[in-house]
Image (cartoon, rainbow, N blue to C red; front, side, top):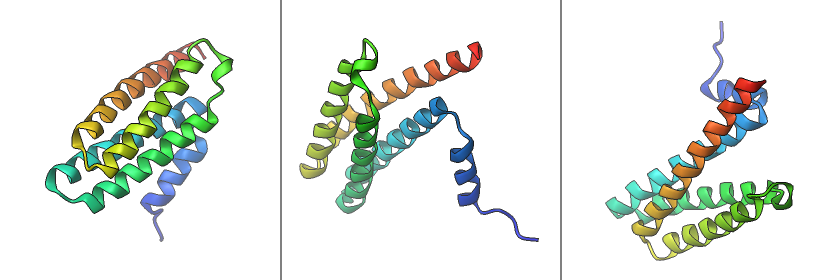
Length: 126
C-alpha cells in the first residue's frame, strides 16, 4: 500500500483551506522565509539568504497583487506596507543586511498575528 507523500498532504491542505486560512499560510511561509534568511545572513551564507529573500519577495508581491486597496479602510495602508516590505527585502538581499531582514521579520510577524486573529474571529462567527 502506498502512503501519501508530505507534498500530497500539503497540496490537500491548500486545496481545502478557506481563503482566510490560505492567507495565514502565506504569512506563515513569509515569516519562515525571513527567519531562514536571517539565519543564513548571520552565518555568512549569502547564497542561501538570497533564495529565501527572493521567495519572500514573491510572496509579498502576490499578496500585494491580490489586495484590493479600495475595498476597505485599511487597504491603502496595507498596500503601502507591502511596498515598504518589498523595498526592504530587496535591499536586505543586495546589501546582505541582516538588520533589514530582521525589520521585515518583525513586520511580517505582526501582520501574521493580525491575520491569524482575524481568521479565528471569522471562523468563530461562521
